[in-house]
Length: 162
Image 1 (cartoon, rainbow, N blue to C red):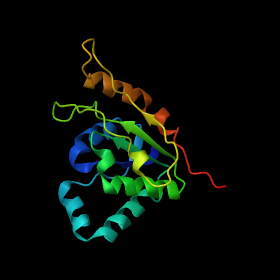
Image 2: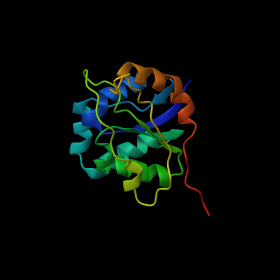
Image 3: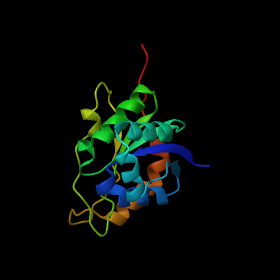
Image 4: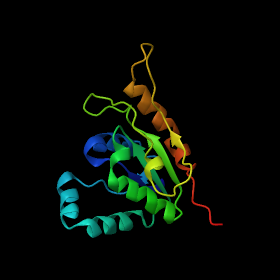
């Protein structure tokens, strides 16, 4: 069975890219809620969202932040990063802006770990590949991600106790 991880990401912008990552089948992630289920959880309030995150993250071996163009601006992503760090879960980032979502790729987003309180230096892996014109090649990006996802997932950093 693949390593069990929690994927943190900007739902609205990147859910299709996240599905591509999940389709690689190198790792087992939490269920990705459809928009109706996510709204159902969100409507129950902030504590309900925190409880859902806690339940989904509880038994995962690592937390991977899938970084798209606007991931760093999402409060729940920052919460998930801070929770993973506090819980001493291996934490890492992987850039996914170069994966195609309905035929489009994005520009790279800011480092979300820089916005999380007290979080140390976290590795960010970038599979983005470019063609000879300098344009993002989403198929080559996907291949590079497929070839490296399992290896990268083992390189997360945990909070050290002093």
